[in-house]
Amino acid sequence: MATTAVTKKSLPLPGVETSTPKPDGSPSSFRKPKLGTSKSRKREIPEGIWTKCPRCSVMLYDKELDENLKVCHHCSYHFPISARERINSLVETCSLQEMDADMVSVDILGFTGVASYTAKLEEHQKNTGLNDAVITGIGKIYQHRVALGVMDFGFLGGSMGSVVGEKLTRLVEMATDRGLPLIIISSSGGARMYEGMCSLMQMAKTCGALAYHARNKLPYISVLTNPTTAGVMASFATVGDLIIAEPGAMIGFAGPRVIKDTTQSELPPGFQTAEFLLDHGLIDTIVLRKEMKDRLSYYLQYLTERQRQISAG
Image 1 (cartoon, one colour):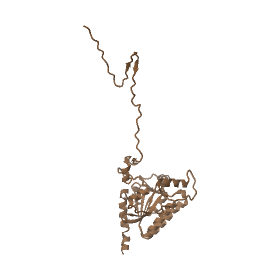
Image 2: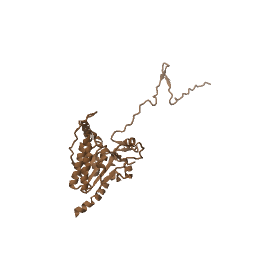
Image 3: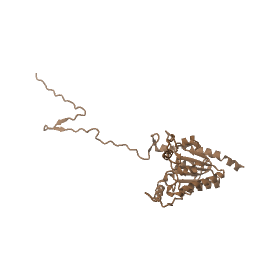
Image 4: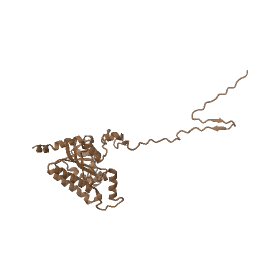
């Protein structure tokens, strides 16, 4: 009986290279693509869409962050905002009559260095759209007409030079002449050293104008934001009838490292934060940015009640 030979074909195992003979008997090489050789695309997050919160590390959608006045809705971290953004969040639409908008600084000392003072001014004017580090004017917070000054840390660290001091002084004098309450929102690294002694003179000038304002029994509310330090902190920022701060704001004269090296002692936890200063009586209250407009209106109502009674006679 004839037997039939059956040839059993083996299936190739996964991951094993096999060779198929060519007609001439030589094996042909079958190349299997190697795993991991293809370059994977790295997903990059486009700028201007997401922002990482520096406190809680949560990624925040920029549109939602703007709608929340640049406050993290997870941990209530207050991001820095520009003077224009802060004004828009406080005053009624198109109610601000800006003062001295064309006033610009000059290089009094002929300052020289890596970059001249004039070049720095031009750079920050281009980047911020401002002529200097403060915006002043008369506006309305709900029904209250107020003299309002708002500093912008984005312009040379919100430093106070001759223009900042002059604009704030003129604002205070106008508020005194018109019998208006005054609000100044500070965000500054201190006096502007590019102008030397001229910048330090602004401390006395602004406080002198505020003294006349107080003599006329007119209220002054000072709002401290992150950061408020050095010459600004040592002058008009801390002489308000009511001193308010945003949560977590750094407030002080010298930096913590300088104080630690000078005193040769360990500083307490939370030193120079708004919460620490509230506990020790330097400021009166801490107000969330989203609540600032309503709270300012409430305080203005209370502080101007006596003035309205006198006017009603």
